[in-house]
Amino acid sequence: MCAEKVLPKTIDEIVLEVLETDFLIIGAGNAGCFAAIEAKRQNPNLKVTLMEKAYIDRSGCLAAGMDAINTYLKKGRTIEEFIKWSRSQAGGLIREDLAIKVAENLNKPVEEWEQWGLPIKKDEDSEEYKTRGKWDITIQGESMKPIIAEKVREYGCEILNRVTATNVLISKGKVVGAAGFGVRNGKMYVVKAKATCIATGGAAGLYKTYQNDGIDSHHQLWYCPFNTGTGYAMGIRAGAEMTTFEMRWCATRTKDFNGPIDTISVGYKTPMINAKGEKILEKRYAHLGGEAAPRYIRANAPMEEWLEGRGPCFVDTRNMSDEDIKQMKTDYLNERPTYVLFMAARGQELKEEPIEIYGNDPYIVGGHTASGYWVDTNWSTTLPGLFACGDVSGGVPNKFVGGCAAEGLLAAQGAVKYIAGLENLPEVDEKQIEAEKLRVYAPLFRMEQEGDGVQWREMEERMQRLMDEYAGGVHQFFRMSEEQLKYALKNIKILQRQVEYLIAKDFHDLMSCHEVIDRLDVAEVLIHHLLFRKETRWPGWQTRVDYPQVNNEEYDCFVNSCRNQETGEIEMYKRPYEQILPGERLQP
Image (cartoon, rainbow, N blue to C red; front, side):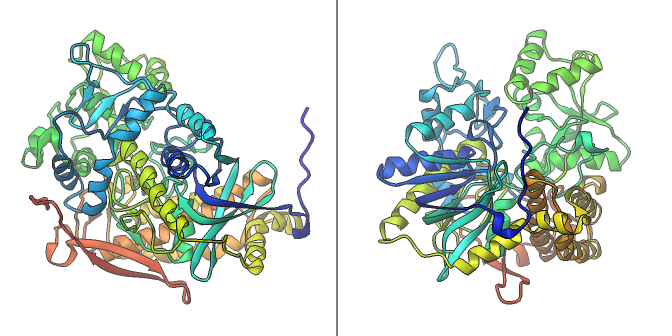
């Protein structure tokens, strides 16, 4: 049997480990791994350190694998076509300067993945990658994360597994590293760095899920449940500029399981139907592209059908061939293997009964939408010394797996150039470290000294209900109004004040406490963004019932935010759209 862990009883018993590195990457998922590899390729003499909350071989969104890579420039496709498509999918709002650079680098990480051992399916005749839709290629991606994790090791990067980051460190207005603690050993880690990159992924768990009926469904989400917005929250607290949080990601998913439907609808061209058997997108959304409509329309359509009494809705698998059904189940085994068991447990025959679909809870995820850090073309944030890539980086929607990997390369290149201009490792204020230590371990000592307080799960459930009911959650069919949002903001601020009552019985509980704290900070910013954009630009993703129309005159722009470091208040403002490539931009 394992020896019982002895928890510290006072702040003096916390073991402090101080490390020094050239380049610190927080988050060792897809983007973080490619950033580490690229930094070592750019300068093999650099010391590169990854701080990972889980274990690098199976962490992040790719932990269980994927059945496709959604963005790849196939033979004959151009960057101009990609930008035009991305504009249409995002309602005309993308950072074109960033999107062009991502598109220029899309193929490199994908092709390298294949060289390192990732099985990518090929067409029998041409030996080109097998396609699924305009920009997708099909893969057997169960092992994609272990493959890049092993490559990180080969390049000699230092990996801090099971260390959860808590805040960036600031010195003379620059980010000079980050603090975190060991989820297993309880140590506090202070990593001093010349440059720091956030690659922690987006934010799940802000909203209550539609199938949340108790502890057993706590992690029954579409997006990785362990991506809790920490990367955003660290930047928000430090005063970094954020963009487009109001462009939430709300998708249509398999009901009661939250599995992807693109595998079925795009890969096997199965139509979306309502309870009357009508093809929803063709019947009511033909003017917006029908089955090729923007993703926010595809998310909103089933919810509108429910509201108008034509639900439930389905993807119609009844005309699929036996061979296609078998292949589709194989595809799911590469990404959501338990979904095959889910269908088997229900005794569901897909040729007789279609798959029911519904909306999922909203997420803030910059790989699918444009929400995240405001960065320049070196992927540097507005805080000197801090870079961002992947789902946590804003401005470039529809980048998905390939684009997030490409951003890892680009952020590393920017960071290496920044490091080259520095001579010495920056100093870190000891008072800042002590203050962070007190903040981080407070729930643990509160439990020891007082024995009573608020458990993280209680606060999480309260937050999720508030967001769901008043900030446009799935149970409200993604709809919201000024009054509802103000009510949500008022109560989220109450919860933020009540974090001083959180208690933790062990280090895992302590991590969960800080995940709730981080989500609350992200939720506050999100509500401010939803309030500020007084229009409906993306029905479903951002449905303002009090402002149901698009208002290009006022809001053909980016909505950005920054926390005032003196007052602590979130300040909102606009940044103009800069169009680089010609062509139609805005949706009707």
